[in-house]
Image (cartoon, rainbow over all chains, first blue to last red; front, side):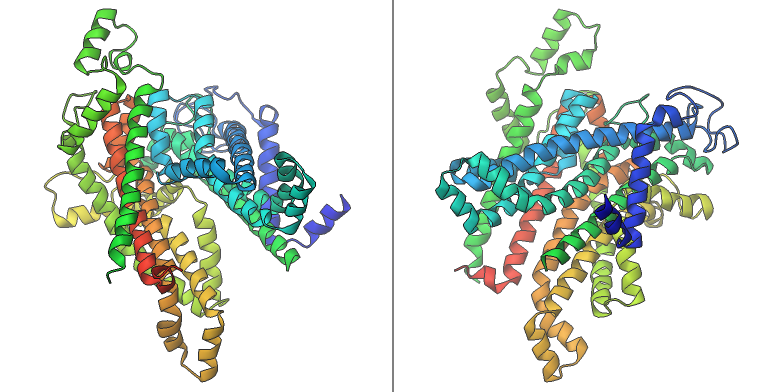
Length: 275
Length: 318
């Protein structure tokens, strides 16, 4: 705990700003039902009212409170993106580390499959799969997680390749340790800093990706509040000079920028430690 | 240049192999996954006879591999099938829209590539100056903005505040040159901003990387002028990676175009793809997906070949 505070004291302004925004979003996401003044899909007033005391950010295209929708949106958008990232990461990292450690036909097979998927634009592939399976949250999570795990696989494999040729891995092999032990105890700890940074970036990427899908109307479906679909639903307001589609778009941008700032600081720091 | 031909042939061969696998994936994937096309068209109220008749008409009753072969054959003859939602030939729906998408992507590329390289060079040259700092911080945040956020900010400034351009880019056949430009400005600007940041950062990083190598220091010690060092010593070595980044970003632009087209209601291929996905119009989805994939793979192939040509070390592998 003391170390954490010390660490935070040395952090640059940008990273502090990022950490504050991330913490705030997490708090809002966790406490959504307590913080939100109205219900998630409760119609409270007229359409597209300008901000007032009762409705601090105005109302949306159906007359729901914008602030309430934003708060619930934080919960849904972050939760779905986080679950997706966890699955993509678990799958990609484990397979990547194992492929690099064992080598041989398993490595070749997995790498070829990943090559083919990476030669194809993710958004287009996701659109095509969703056109067949239809859009529901579980399908969305699994499809995006599978598509993104290919990128994690690439990175994890490249990292593990560099570590697997080290003497201490040879020593472990000669001791007769099993592959899983080597992956878990010898390779993973050494690949961890890079993987943590990648987790942050992957989350940003998936978060933006799901927001884009929702914005296209093919991601999270109404009436669930979600930042990407809120931009889409309110986009008509721009023609009247009403700014409400900008709020959810800005929160998406703010959160991704903040995560990037923190990851940047983290990478910078781990580079310093190594040097 | 005789070493180039087998190399290009090899890469092209690999690209075609990827394309073939992808066409197989697209076809088998779309066919074999759950979800009945006939049911989707006719809706829940369809009777068994109606469903069977429609399946027969669409040849859905034949086995998958027969249909894949006949699908490939049709495509190679330019017959892309008919749309499920309105029965029109897919090629007719796609032709004009594909041109529009190319126009938009091409104009965005024409603006962003020179701008990114010049700005990247300037930042690398005057490293840590105020200009470099401003550009570096703003591009770092621009990378993590969603495309639609950039688009709506531009709409807010140029449409709501200044009323300079239309907020929807309704392109129609037979529009005059000036009208097209007027409609194209905002979507083009959005796409430019979206790819500019990444391209510029990579250019800057590459040049700075090259500038820190020993032979540049040697050139400096010899007393070579700064702009000559950049032009004759640094740039030739940085060219390969920069070309690679530019072409990769173009491939990315092809995908980014989808969201931008939807924001501005621009009648391009991306919007058609999104519409068809929500209508589950499989033939249109298959074809437009395949076109996007071809473009993407072709651009990546170009990046490969160009970076090999520009780097003597890759040209003569050990």
